[in-house]
Image (cartoon, rainbow, N blue to C red; front, top):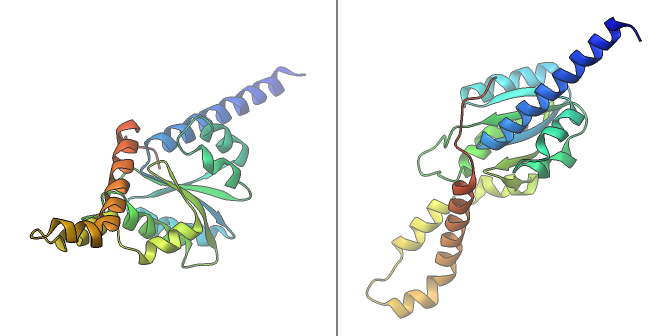
Length: 198
């Protein structure tokens, strides 16, 4: 094999290793990491402009390299969903909305360009290391955020009657508090967000 061919192979391997390392960094530091398939470059470009407005960025990835990069990360569950023309959409912003500490509204907002057109299709996402499927995304569009659930539960707290509260609202309160605790535990384990390349 000629030295020229060997040089090309080494350059190709280096590029793949660099891309896999980039995917790994993005997966570990991004608040939202979303996989989308696209049917046309024009459709992806239009979606990319909408994502940029919301502080999110999209990058085309090779399936095999992306799977390698995702393997050791908190978003490794996205690996099996990587197939076909795929782009990674990511953002490190803590929230796009007030009262949305856990990113539910932000997730819906970022996924919107992939839901409004047939050219770009939402596949799956990682929200703070939690798998978001298409069904999860659909539920997020209509369900209140955990903060809203907690506020509703607290606003109906009958301070004059603890027993009555325990009987009528305990289930909602426990569910909302449990969600908060789980998210806080995941946030403590996650590395700090850093700026990433577009």
